[in-house]
Image (cartoon, rainbow, N blue to C red; front, side, top):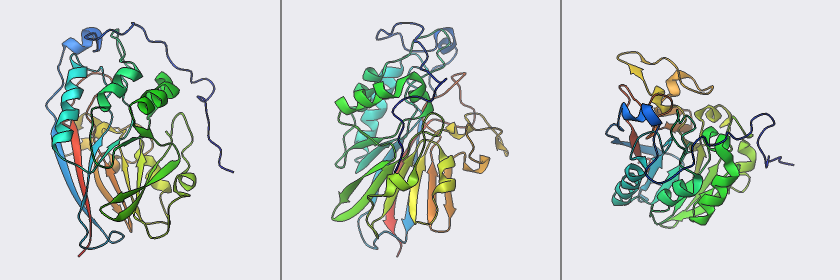
Length: 289
């Protein structure tokens, strides 16, 4: 029997919100005045996989992760603009990879789940918007996010999946639980997948790629911020979680498995990125040949 936790791990209760939220107050208080959000880029990956049929139209996916909405002044409008930009990309599917809330407010206020979900409710694509929750979301209150996202028609997966159809091609999309506050269970997430169907797994933490063995497929993840601060010719000195530094961002191939890690669109701690711009990932998946 698969166990799924319905509450936070004991001792990891949600933090109180230090300042009641009102629109226009998002930001990290005095810290947010030091910097506005840096310009973001669109990073494009073209992935060819043997488990996808040759000649079938590519599946176009937008990946958004680690928004930490409230990290900068004007962040609500910024993320509304980002969602509008994603809509203009005309993707087939949007995947949200966790850490939507800013848990390091530094005397500022935190944007509540209902407001964050309202922002992502603006996303439009033929196959819809799907999400997993990250450690910051569970630290704030994961159940609040589940309710808020559901109210906006956003399907959040935690060790579960759904069958999608893209121009006649059946695809299985799964989502894993957070590694810090929950228990990811890949077997449970994939139990409804049909043999032979292409598989995409959403995970907030790329460390789950260690367990993604024995089955061909693609995993997409965030969490690392790409290191957020990257040294020239060296890269990041540290990333959160247990993933190796080599998985800080980009494409990782391991036999018949592929991992895509996005640097994300927001910041944590000091609201600044160095040699690691915020990004929207545009992922196109097609068959070989």
